[in-house]
Length: 302
Image (cartoon, rainbow, N blue to C red):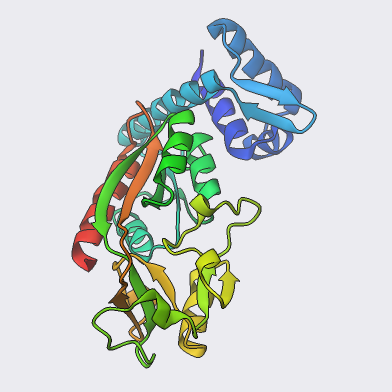
């Protein structure tokens, strides 16, 4: 087993394609294929499952990749320390629901980077993709919430994928509205009071089961619904249409803007926001730093 073989496995897993990996790694596809096959024979495991649609990691391959990436990161640090040249860019990826504090924590980690080059990824995406990204090693950490409505289903999926949920904070549901909204100054909003206003929610693509909804009060409960994909569009509709959404009380004036306020909702439920990671796989340095930044950010905005 060589570092080069580990780099090849990492490249194929990242690209999801032998042809794309060979292009990025500047190696011919037959050489790449033969090197990985030799590693599989040496270790007596199947790292990738091959089909007409491409290559995917097997369960053994996922476990191997986590260890391989740790070795590559350690090798890069040693190389950089003694030669001043890193053999691998610092890499880190996180997939999250549309939380401003998750973006701010990501920026906190980026500000501490001293490397001249790095390859970091932040994906604000749908709930099902967050789980899949972490399970398939596309992201090291996911950020999502559990509530009474979705916890049973999501915890079952997390266990199946050998993922764990680590709670960051617990909040009661809040209504996000514009500062000029008729209900903005209410001490507490009843769900019935929202009937005449459009409910803005994040659409979940093909995975539209209720337990994937990003809002603790899903659109099925509402008469007027608008679904969006990104946080900026949601903010614009909240401000321009007297719309609203339902989320935790963690509001960032820097990213949500000064014209959006959070008002408690009279709904008997809790929002447990937390990070999702792979079971029994230690976080990288960047992952640990991000988890710490998340905890610091949620403590500051609550």
